[in-house]
Length: 172
Image (cartoon, rainbow, N blue to C red; front, side, top):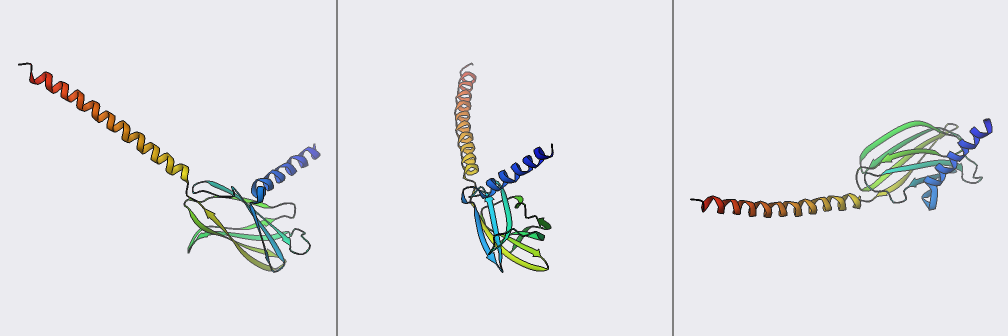
């Protein structure tokens, strides 16, 4: 039973890593001997779409994972801080995952501050979020359908009104 539990946990770590880092959706950055691996899925996020992100931290020369004692995350766009959260711990067994829904298109900064054995290491990644073209297309289609239905209803009402007017006028 214990081996089944370990197998299931291992499966979820593997799936999570594939989701966030699949098909090259990750960026590596080295700062002061720390290799930060930042992943995201989807690779090209859209406004109002959920994005799953991952972070793992390794020794840049040995590639051994660090046991990060404290990690702080900040998401901002320009000078506006949109999200802050902290005191996460990244275990060596796998990356840390978190999700966020970007409300509008643009370039966002994802800042990390990691503490390892009293050393504070900071880095930042950017995520470019595109407009939700499906939502724009859906809005346009709703407008077009409403316009056509409104126009047809207007023409139909004018015909009915004209017929009623003729009947009322010639019935003397």
